[in-house]
Structure formats: C-alpha cells, structure tokens
Image 1 (cartoon, helix red, strand yellow):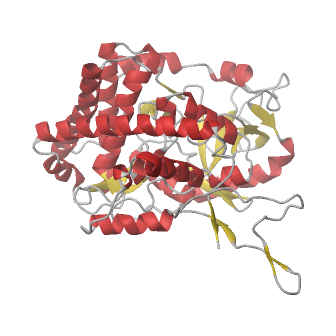
Image 2: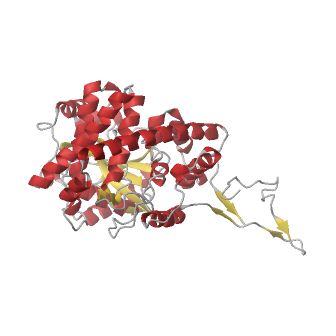
Image 3: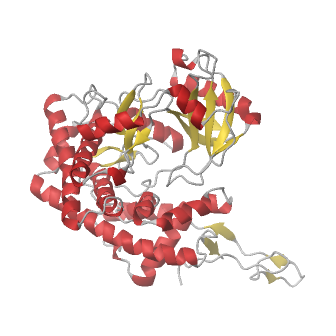
Length: 483
C-alpha cells in the first residue's frame, strides 16, 4: 500500500531483516529515511488554490483517514520520537486524555484539512493556534500585566479566516468538554467569538486605534478583570514558593524543575545575545542581566510537550532574591501552517525569528524579552515568566461568562490582526478589507459556525482513531520509506 509505514524489523544482530547479500557476501542495507509530506502538502496547497481538482484530506474516510491521522502525527512528532525525548510519551498520553487536549496538540492535522483554502480572503499576520487557552494575562514591555493573545509558536501570514476557524472550533470543543454546554449554547458561544472579532474590527476600521489600545485591569470586561485579580501574585512569594531553593541562589529541584547549574555560561551568552539582538540595555528591574542559575522545565504545555524548555534565573537589582526575573527559552520549529496556506508574498521568516516577528506584530505593547537566539546550533525563542502570567480556568465559566469570554477573545484577536498593516508586512488597509470580506455578516457567521461544528465532529472521529492506534503502539516509531 502506498505510503504505508512500519518500523524496520531487526534481526538479532541489529541489522534490518530486509537486507540483501551480494555475490561476494557483503550486506546491502536498504535505503531508509524519515518520511514527511511537507513538500507534498505545499504542492497540494498551490494546486487547490489554483483551482485544480484534487482530493483533500477532509474527504478521506475509513482506513484511509486512519492512516492519514497516524502518518500526520508521526511526522509532526518525528524528532521527539527519534530522540526519545523526555515528555514524548506524556504528550501522546495527554492527547489521548480528552478531545480538547487532542485538538490543542494536533494543529498540523487540523490545518492539513484546510490546505489551500480561503485564498481569496485578506491576508493578515495570523496567530496560527487560536483557542480559549491561548489568550491570557502576561507582562508588557514594562513588566505590567496586560491581556491578549499569548502564544505565537505557529504565527504565519495567512487568510484571517484561518485564525477565526481554528478559534471557533476551539471554543466549540472546549465549551462542550470543559463547560458541558449543549449544542445550542455552543453555537451562541462561537457566534459571540466571531461577533466580538467583527465588532472590534469595525471599530478599528473607523477609528484606527489598534496601536494604542490594550486590555488592562482598569478597562477590561468583568470576566477579564476577575482573571487579572486571580492571576496576581507578589513576585517574592512566587519566586520563593515555586522556584527558588532555600538559599535563594538557584532553582530548587522538583518533578518539574531540573537544575543544570553547569549551563550558566551557555545561557549567559544566550541572554547577552538576546539583549544585543533586541537592541536594549538592561531594564532597571533586571539588574545587570546576570544569570544566577538554569533549569530544565519538564511537563509544560500541550502542543510543545517533549520539546526542550529551559528557565534562566536573572539576578534582580536588590540581589536578595526577592526581585529576580525568570526568562524562558523554548526550542522553536516550523509552523504547522507552513506550506499549507495559499501562496503569499508575505514571509515572517523561519523558526524562532518567525515567532518573534509574530509577537512583535500582534502584541504592540509586548514583553521586551520576547526574542530569538541560537543555543548549541538550535533555534530558541525566549520570553519572560511572570507572577501574573495566567490564562482562564475554563471549567469555572458559567453559560453567560463563556459568551462574554469568547467575545473578549474575538476582540483581542481582531486587534492582533488589525496590527498587520501597522507593524507587519501587509501593504494594504486590512480592516476595511476584512469587513468587506465578511459581508453579509449573517452568512459569514453561519459559515464559521458550520465549519466549527463539522471540524469538531471530524476531530472527534480522528481522536477515536488515534486512541486505538496509540494503544496498538503506532507512535513508538516514525514513518519510514524503504527502497
């Protein structure tokens, strides 16, 4: 069967059992390489966008759909599987745990179903992975709390509808799995998300205030003010309770934190490179940007489980461990949307540079420590951890606050998109273009709701197939191509 993938069978001596022998007795090993479909999907995107008739993955059923899901997840996690990276098994167990976690951790599968679509729609700097838990409270450039989009790992230039459809599907699934809402109420939640987006985009089209606005404690809707209040914690308490050893000179070892003090010099260079690349002098609150300690952070995130992640402790100006700063470094990779979006002349760059470009465009008042550096030849993105970095507890939302929260997230997404022609590469007026593309509004809202319901149903079936394959050991190896 074309595209079928299994691991190579090994003889007791460790060589593949498919090896042949020449007349002189020498073994000829079969050619093996990790399979991938990035280029194939890039060609499919171009073909679909140009109007050619092909079969997209959404039309696959039965065993063909099962093998597509299996191959996509193997490819998406190939590096982690091959390196036997810590957290890889936990990642797959997390995906199997429930539908919303599966949705969050399988963006590549989701976007391959969208390959080449919406090429006629206005392009923006897309977040790439919009869902209810990718909005939250975080530090701005001065270390003060703001609310907005907060995960730029998948950021890329794409049609604005890609973010709306991903977000609508996320709210549809989360409102059921986390909120227990029935279908009729889930429709209302999704409609509030899209209406929140369109209302804010209309306001930016009329007033052009997107660069000056930000959600803060004093001007946020009630549901977000509560999040600000719940997220706040004094820095010295946060450091002492969650991170520092009794001496205050380094990280304490826990199940999540693994101190690696021998790497201080490596990460001091990374911090110095970051400051140089960002072109800033050390803020007063970060002292002299002196690295006190380094640790590996285990078990964080959903999509990024199994990817290397480090915390770096920076000595604060008081030098008494009450005002230290923690900078996070996470290994970057290509966007799940790369090669799948309709062809565009706009390019955000690669790996961490792409992520940083997305943050710089979409969060006008964002964290100054958000940056891209190279560590031991690998691309890493950086950002500040803070006592008040937090996202919403979805299981605490009532029926009404689900709608309120969805509307605020839609508005926050609209602001990030509206900045595409101010701080990004878009060379035309984004806001009126989007409003025109979303006309008539009633039809646009209905289309997004229908998409979300269909995508959620498809994802539910994919999750069932994944769980069955996971139980059968399908993700212990990567896809292989044999000669």
